[in-house]
Length: 291
Image (cartoon, rainbow, N blue to C red; front, top):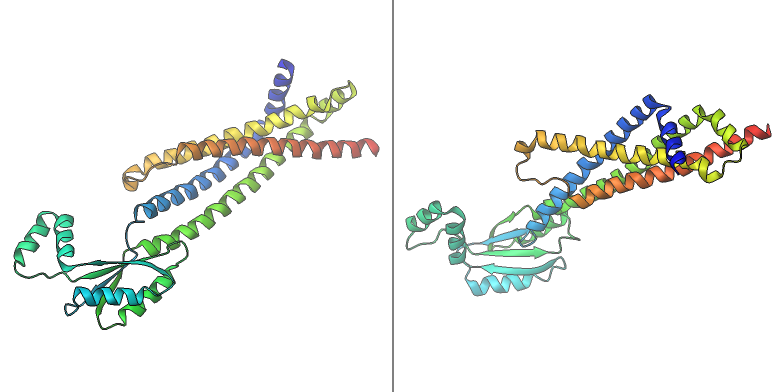
């Protein structure tokens, strides 16, 4: 076993410059993947924080009493995309403003003592998983057409839901591209090293070395590139994150379980690449023997 490990390190060290270029390329690809994951995690967290916020808020005019507003809510709730509508009275909106704006809210409340400048509203909840931004705009347009409604506003939940869906697609595509390019890069690097060791491998084959013995350095080379390349990519991304931490504010770094998954995937890609490269090398070697 000791000889196998020494042989593997000798195999890896033969093409140092080639390995360096491969590691830089894999690290760069991993860095891009980390960027997509960071963006995806940030949007997903923000969206989860807004799950309790209504995507649409319709403000009723002052002539509408609570009973009329509830009847109107039951009427528009027939829309298949609307799941629930909550009525918020003028008094509750005034109390919310006082809590939200603190001392300024109390000044507003005291300044309008005896009257309430805040209208009653309807908080409209929809199925955020299936409703797009365009559908939300259509619902808002339909509701705003009623005479009892003065204005309809978006809280930003719908926009985030759309962005989240697009980010999910982009992240999946980036993962697929990262895996594919890493496989190709590592496989090409291992094959090039195999070519440098052609005479040595030929000698080992003549002395009766098993296929497992010959394959081991190829697999270890792939594990080395996949592991070190992914770790370097994570380190580079962390340095960039630390550099812009003040601009990013409270945005959290990529979770540990995702970092472990990235490194683990790099190792698996390295193993697959090593096996694939050895098969390619073995097939080429057999053809040469035949000719």
